[in-house]
Figure 1 (cartoon, rainbow, N blue to C red):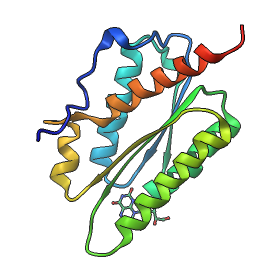
Figure 2 (figure 1 turned 180 degrees about the vertical axis):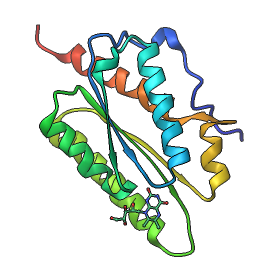
Figure 3 (figure 1 turned 90 degrees about the horizontal axis):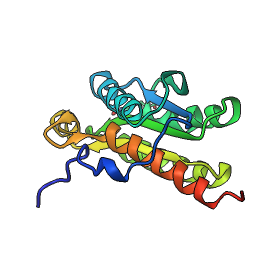
Figure 4 (figure 1 turned 135 degrees about the vertical axis):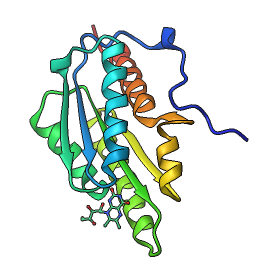
Length: 163
Ligand code: DLZ
């Protein structure tokens, strides 16, 4: 079965992001991949109307630090959603499993703790090629997908707001 194209979505179904504020946390491990994810996310947010000043980027050393970096955003910045971007490539040890499960659990908990969208833009791949394929390569860019998800989740939350 073909892998989904992460950059292929129906733009007409994406709400206007001009009144939305985003935090993006980027892991510095595998920088050629994570910088491509960040570029994709930023471009997609701007394409849907986000103002440059309302897209705030911060960096953490590795993917394991993504949940805490995201929590700092929630506590110290006025943002509507936080996107975390990282890339964990499987090595010879079990490090991969521990990092992936730590980030997954951490991000899920933040969503519920802060009642705010924390978007999971973590590539978990067997090798560098699989990561490149999903960071602007033949399977699109997971940063694009994360950006669209952030916009849609903010819009969903606002749809429940008492007017
Ligand atoms: C240590 C480590 C390893 C082996 N692999 C990755 C990786 O593929 N991707 C990634 O983002 N980070 C990796 N790290 C670093 C950890 O995420 C973390 O920064 C360190 O364990 C320090 O807490």
